[in-house]
Image: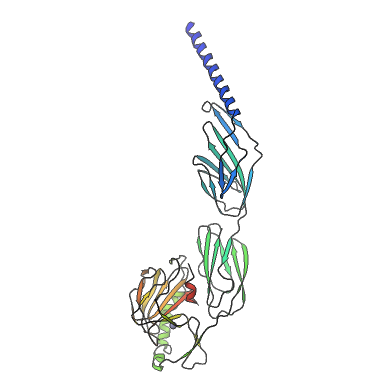
Length: 401
Ligand SMILES: [Zn+2]
């Protein structure tokens, strides 16, 4: 009996003590303000005047909500696919997408908002005795960002079209009368190249880019380039054996032309292209009208001729893979380098070659030496740039990055 009473007294005392402690804690809690943290969304501070705080009393025995003006919920607008949320490390982040998909994470986050509409962002931060709950909405209206390097290009120029702020695996189509390179899509960005040939008529052209069924229309005003006229003669025997020789023509067509039709969806090159021979004199420019042996109709020059003594080093203008290295009657020792996306550079008339078909080459790597093989009137390197089957001015390459 005594024992039972003692136990009873102890239990009552414990209950009283516990209750007193809970009451004490409750009073402490309601007297204190919630711990208001500052987070940033895309570098913009989210300064909450209000937050909801949930307290756990006695290790979770008596949880209750303490709410602070819940109706004040912030809204942000963003037109960025990739957004940044900076929060404290031990903080839980919950994002509910417009299609009600829930993404849970912890700590600072790169938030990818590739759906348009309203996102709900909830942040739960565990404090010493409580969890502070913050929430805000983000209104997302993504628009692709399209940059065209030049809307008034010269004949022979290459346009660089950069697209950013797009979903991964977007559908991108280009409608115009030109033929673009392969479109390279990376995470949230895309890039392609649009060559103007020397024979592109100088006038206005529409350029339409469709991204995920939305259409963006631009006008290209192609300006006439003042191409040079060159008059010279080549020994009749050389003509007979080369440009006048069907065997030579067919050999070049059969060997080189199929290479220009191929285009891989990768970019092998890195940074700007370099001039393949150093300190050379330009003896013939891209698109030059060449009256050979008094021809009435000029042939057009498809590249740049760099004149310099035979034996000078020839370097790969950029990294890529050697699509062809060999001797052809028409062009002598010839190299074609595939830089990816359909962009290729060609090196003609070399004395010898230091690479072979299939080799991978780095920018600046020795590929051969200047010579005067094939149809050539002196030591020089003929350097040519193509996107698929279209020739463009190699000078444009030196601006590509
Ligand atoms: Zn040439």
